[in-house]
Amino acid sequence: MSMPKMHNTPGGRVFDVFNFILLGIIGITMISPFLYIIAGSFATEAELTRRSFFIFPETFSLDAYKYIFSTNTFTRSLLVSMGVTLVGTLVCLFFTFSMAYPLSRKTLMGRNLFMNLIVFSMLFSGGMIPGYIVVKSLGLLDSYWALILPIAINPFNLIIVKTFFQNIPIELEEAAKIDGCSEVGIFWRIMLPLSKPVLATFALFYAVAIWNDFFSALLYISDSAKWPVQVLLQQIIILSQAQLGDAASASANFVEPPDQSLKLAVVVVATLPILIVYPFLQKHFAKGMLLGSVKG
Image 1 (cartoon, rainbow, N blue to C red):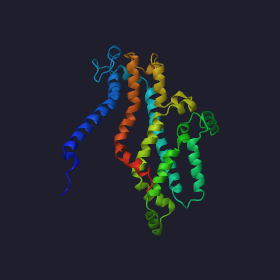
Image 2: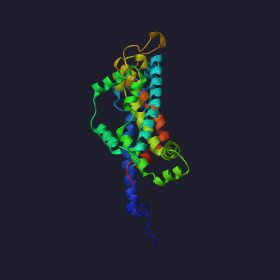
Image 3: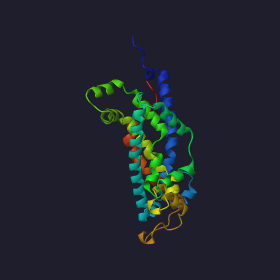
Image 4: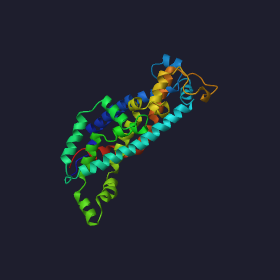
């Protein structure tokens, strides 16, 4: 006789109701700040001052967004961030995966030495000033590569990917070698197709890190025309009372926005691109993290 399922019993149904209520409260608590930020970006200064929290603004206003997009400077910075994030993510994935695969092979000469150096780099960092000197010595100042190459390989991500490659049965590699496949061919034709969940997961990690990074641009980029959107948005907040960019590029009907809604609109604009990308990678996210986290 089969045992009844837990959710069909009185205790199981009570437990399901309790879980539903608890998770619902946690979910509402977590999403409420995002809803307030979006609503506040469309609200007026008076409403933001009068109401401490709301989901729907009483008066719908686009003044903050008109201010942000009133100049070509913002559009240019947005394109810079998109380009740096796209190229940087591809570069980071290439270096991380191409280094993790050889390190996952026990036959690699000097494997333990390389792994010790990687772990050492996780624990100790040269610091900001040595990093700046290295970037300057390589001639990367005021270059987009200064925002990509210093973070091309994350040691933690590298170790996770290496562990994933170690979990792939060695028989697949041996069968490919029998068929005459080279080491590079095994990596591109077998290992990478099998690592799509991990690839998608770390693509998201690297993309978010590069998109949100503004400190590197503050250090290495002095040309304002090459600023990514995060640096420009910071300047918008600091100089929210001043006209941004060339006055000729602004609309004649330009209305100065309220300070609070401008800050909330900045958060929305800076977060929206990553929120758009995330749903396409979400299905691989949990699987990708678990595949490389434990060695079987």
